[in-house]
Length: 185
Image (cartoon, rainbow, N blue to C red; front, side, top):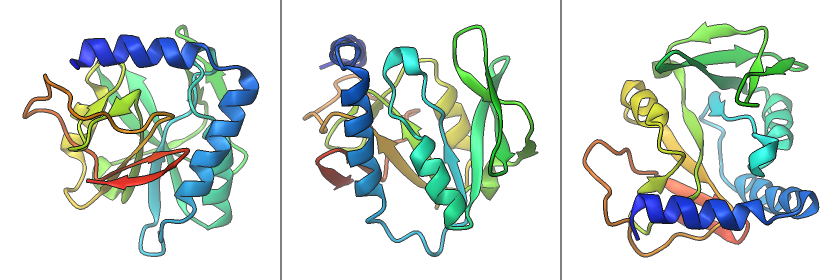
C-alpha cells in the first residue's frame, strides 16, 4: 500500500467512528501508554486532537503527564515550520482557521529538549514507517530532535505489512500504540 492509498483508506475508516467510539478507543490507547516506563523522560511533545477529524483524544494523556510532573509541549504550526510550545496545567487553546486547537500562552523551547514525541498518524507499517497527513511537518521537526528522543506513534489501527513508498527522509517510529497494544520496531 502506498502512503496516499493508506491515508485515504484509514482516513475514511476513522471518519466513520462515532464520538463514543473515539473516546473508547482513545481510552484504550491511553491505558496502553501508561504501561511504558517513562521515569527517565521529562519533556513530552504531544498533539492536540482535531475533533472534526476524529483524532485520538489526547487530553487525558496530557492531564496524566501533568500529574506525573512532566513537561508538556504542544506543536504550533507557524508558516512552514512547527514550533514547540511548553504549556502549564490548565492551559487554554483556540481553534485556528483549519479547526486545529493551538495553545494561547506558552514558552517556546528547542526540539533538542524533548525526550518523548507522541506522534499522530493514520497507520504505520511493520518497520515503523508512518502515514500522517502528508504535510511533512513532523519529518522536519523530527530532524531537529535529539536522536535518542523516543518517537511513539498513536493510532487506532494496527500496523500494516509495508508502506511501499517510504523513503530515506522519513523518520521511522520507535514504537506504535494502538487500542490492542504496543508494537516496537
